[in-house]
Structures are given as structure tokens and as C-alpha cells.
Image (cartoon, rainbow, N blue to C red; front, side, top):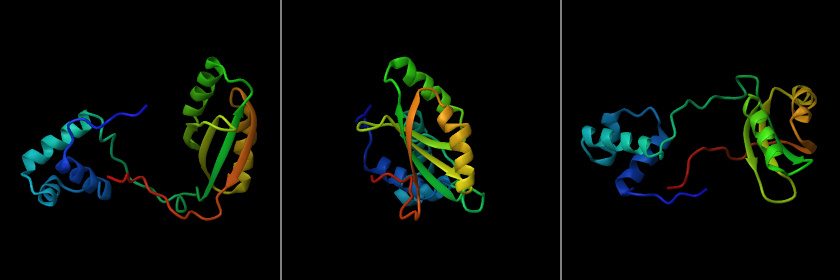
Length: 157
């Protein structure tokens, strides 16, 4: 599922870079940063949103301050790898707020999940009441993060 960039130039890349650094930058400051008029910058940003280069804007929250300081990655192995099991699993994961990311992967297991919990007791409760009840789950492996060395959403442009 890779898409090659279409009709994107150096100025678009500078706009995207500036927005990654500060999603709340004013249009006027963005225009100054990329040396274009505010009208031209606004049109480019609207095009970048319309064409799917910009998926949205959101605030990055501090999980420690909000009682979600423990990050846990989970490998999930399904009991069968049939289209209906994949679909059931994906649908069930979508409605679980504690699961922040879910990726189908190639290798020795089927999915890699990223979760955030208050502590190990909360994770144990989640594992028993949610994780092991997801459709098709045969086996899981849990990796509690001891130190978060790097965490970014920024893409190298």
C-alpha cells in the first residue's frame, strides 16, 4: 500500500515540515517560513489535505500526566489465518481504546499491538478481559517498555 508522491515540490515539503514541527502555526507565519503569500500557502495546505498528504491535526498528550504511563507492545498470533478471522480481529481491535496501534506484520506472528496502561495491574486486567477475548487469538507475547528512548510522529522529508 505505497503511494508515490504526485505533484509535490520543495515548497510543499517545506510546508509539511513546518506543520510537523508546529501544527498550530498560523498561516501568516507559515507563509513567512516558506516565503510565499498567505493566500498561496493556504491554497497549498488545502490541496495537501485534499490529496491526503495531511491526515489531520491533533494535540500530543502526556501519557504520564493522564495515568497511561506504561507502554506495552503485544505480539498476537491468531489460531487461523483466514480472511474472516482477520476481519473479525480487525473489527474488534477498532473499538478498543486501550489499543493505540495495530499492525499486521510478516514473520512469526500476525499482529503487533501498541497499548498504554496505568500500570502492570491495569495491563493484566486488560489482557484477561479484552486481549485474550479478541476473535481468533491463539497466543500473545507481551513486551512492557522499560524506557521510551524515542517517540515521534514526524516523517523524514
